[in-house]
Image (cartoon, rainbow, N blue to C red):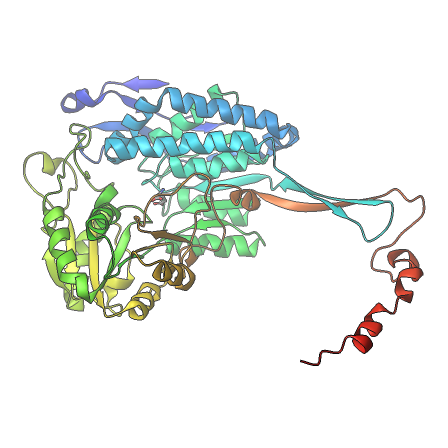
Length: 537
Ligand code: UN1
């Protein structure tokens, strides 16, 4: 790998990586470049990368297409061994990788460590899955005939990921795609190309053959991201997987629909955190703080609306606001005790600032929210204060629109039914949570909420590597990531029948050999039962 000296002011963070596209296990550098900047301190240049055009995408898809033949024929346990080795490399270098996550996208140390651990867990889970990937043996309707199902890989998978989970979410897609025998063309987020590049280099070191995982770098609109979507219509990919906005997800869904493909789409959320009057309030306050302000609210699973039972609303609010005011915001590279750092990029910053106008137009009442933080180290990035709006109802724009920053709305309700109604009154359905001590309320909530994930007495955030992750409504298209469920997203079923009878036995022909022995049908037990056991009670 190639490094250069950083700017003078930023030497303390480390060097700048001079990156490349990674096609067929070779670095490819061509054309104009972009820089990956540390969001917490804009003087730090983490990496410099080329921008891929249609030519590089074509070359990457071609490399993946050629590699597919050998890779898909490689026994799944052998593919699993490479994935296991990759997991061990992540584990050995967890500290450096976590540091890179903090430096490149501004996560706090404990969150960065957690997100690298998620990738490690995913690698270990799918190493073992290589020894399963079960098909089924199914009975035939006919004698001396065997029926078996096989999972088959699709071919080349196109992947676009977001910057907020630059190692965990790519691992959710790339690892299951590879274990099932597919090959990959991945466009990492322009906010995290350095992590993407190192991810691919570690896979190479783990023994992944050339062409199995290719990276094309660049920006989104009018750039590499857009060309990746155009490449769907050109037939470069047999499957597509995307994490990002609902708007872009729909464009990908349309393109895949034209090709009769089902993409994996993991999109936005406006997740409700509901608190009943019988909840453990201390725990609810702590969970709500992290759900709303952890990661600076830049998780698709972050809480958008806190729905409060009116009986405890004032008490909850006063405790929540006093805790929120104490949160430390700062540069996570220099202080590992900060609660969150700068927003990942300017775009999120602009959208965050715009939501103040939206909330004011809606008539919401701001309880806390200083907007952009200024002065000293704050001037080196886009730092914003935690924000809270009271007096919100579900018809307001701020109750409906995802902001992707540290802001949350308070919606007061009078009972469980109105709470559930408010929780369901959004176009999204990713995650959800309720705090209550009543098992009947827990039961009613998990049955009544329309969301892909539901926490009871826990945060709306926080996935596990072996549980299905994904949403309903505008949060996705029903596909799931993680655990055994994601395997369905990267494989298609093949049904195989083998006739060993020695003569032709056609299925769906009403022939004698499909029926049971005539002797069995001579029994009159059913009519004797009816005649002799007439109930008289
Ligand atoms: C995302 O924010 O795009 O469970 C997905 C969580 C995270 C979500 C990742 N792993 O909160």
